[in-house]
Amino acid sequence: MNNQPKIYLIPAFMVLTLFVGCKKTEKVAEPTTTKTEVTGAVATLTTTEFTSITTTGATGGGTITDKGGSAVTDQGICWSTSPKPTIDSKKVGVISINGAGVFTSQLTGLTASTKYYVRAFAINKAGVAYGNEIELTTASIASSTFGFSPMYIIGSTVAAADIEVLTDGGDAITERGIVYASSPNPTISNSKVKHNNAGLGKFRVSLKNLTPKTTYYARAYAINAKGVNYSNEITFKTIAKGNFTYTFNKSQNPGAEELAAYGRLQVAIDSALWYFNNYTSVTKHVYLNYVDGVPTADANNQGWMRFGTNSSYQNLRTMLHEGSHTLGTGTSSWWWSTLVNGKLQAPSVTAILRQITNDNTAQLSGDSQHYWPYGLNQNSEVTSSWDFAYTCLIIEAMRKDGLTEFSGAYIP
Image (tube, rainbow, N blue to C red; front, side):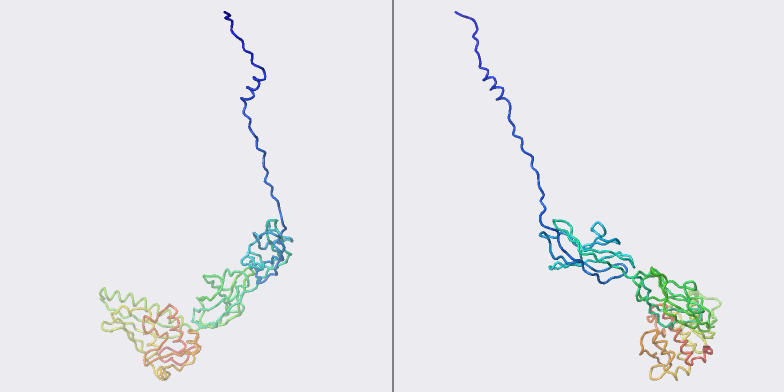
């Protein structure tokens, strides 16, 4: 028995086949490349001539005559102070567009008196297209224009003017007011009153510390980028200063309620004195009394004034009303003879009332004691402190028309 081990021979090609069979085969994908292909052409367009040219802007646009084969994704106008502006300069889009390819754009933020070069633009898939170049010169800044009403609020040391800035000359008004002097052509180097608000529109300014019986020259002014602009000149003359005085009759031993009434009446009489002395030329001395039992207040042309305990009448409105009675309104022969069919036949009164009300048909109405408007007959008639001044202006006009028996001679 042969016990030797058997040897088996494996062909070489089989070994190779086994080794090769153990290795995995991977397929490598070929890289892909995305290709962008530009087709078509840029749009064709023209630039529109500008309208509504101001100091800071204008309205323009363009017309697209051919979109170039693809949709227009953006359009507008571009501009520069140098020729051939592009969208890398300054540009703005559209504010309106129609189906015919016409679009409108609005330029803003420009500088006055400056030449700009402008082109319309349109962008499609093929790129940016520009229209023809147009030169645009912005408007120059002009002077402001004014409405300056004749001055009628004139007292002895105070006056007021109603002014309107109608146009700003193409640039914002940064300051406005009035200048005045005792010689013609005042400027901001003379006396000046600046209004709190700038811009366009109506405003009223008050002049103070004037000299009585003096002629003044006044002009409205406004400041814009061009400089200081002035209105036409207005002249006015202050009246003689009033001399309204009083004696306040008080109890020797007043109680708490009476003391409180004295305090209210003191404020009222001092305020009335200021209005009478600064807006009229009256000469009058009155006697102020606090009288228990007087329902409201009353007065006579001799200057005797009485106020009752009702605190709602212990005020400036009532004090001016009763003061008017001491001067002759409703208490003099002039009053009763001048009042015809409920209307005061007094030319100076009618003239000032029409200026106050801005009504060319206005005429002062009255009865045997009172007048209206601006007679201050009730607290409800007071809408502003100007009503107190208007009352005094009407009284001064009455004096000019002849109400002088109890208020002193009228001095032009």
